[in-house]
Image (cartoon, rainbow, N blue to C red):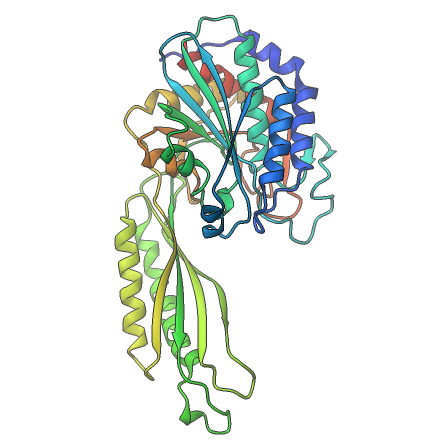
Length: 410
């Protein structure tokens, strides 16, 4: 499929820069921290902002029991639909409104949407409230374009990406509230992403028996057992470097122990220690094999000392993303339009993160990630203090997405 330059789309985006900037600022000023994940009110605010642009917005509250199961308090998914003619593909645009908490170290108000030297600062300015704005204005630009179109575009705004996307994209698709043929998901930069890592989170609970520190031999030291397991994991970790993915941008699998807790008091032999680990899974690996390997390593290490009890619980298993048949035209069009608009070669590759895109792929929907952003997530300070977005990148991403949609629906 040939990428077509569409000056009427470019003109619309240029004429609406202030409106699009105002939308992004309003989104950034709407707190959407997850955790704690009490986001029904934030979803209502986002729905109202979209309605002010003339969209009809469907609200789909997630049942409370499902929300609690994901460690959240409330969530509502939003869908905006645009139909053009009869037949044609249905293309979904997915961006998430929830964000990680701001944390420390900011030089700007995390919810202030301050503009400094052409960059907007604020939590979610880059990941991924900017993509909500870019996708919404891409749909408005598509309405403005005069070319014939056949098909439909849907904007999916979900609010649980930071906890895995289970009650956002996955729930929308399982409930058959949407049946897209193709999808574009929130990106991290102006590169096109067609593959990403999977992720496994395990919680390891090591149980012993408490005792007075004056007579530690009368207990079973859970921390000693946990240390033995951790030592085995850290000794094994360097071998992952030999399993690097062949997909550019992915790299090798990674293992991180991110949380640890336990003990009763300084003068008591600890009776219980828990820790959680994060294992990144490259596309060439099978998630079930990665989990089985870790469980076996933990079990073997546990047997090498005092008789502690060890339980391993899966917290998260996210499959890697790989290109699906039928998605080549989407990826090629995004690359061609991004190359034209950015004025430099933009190619498709992978990232070592995991995203909501996997839920679309699991449902058989070819998807590529593309959105507003600088060259890299590091430049955007994504998930760090002073998260920021160059506004010029917002407008360019909007043109790229609108032009790609126009070609796919032509």
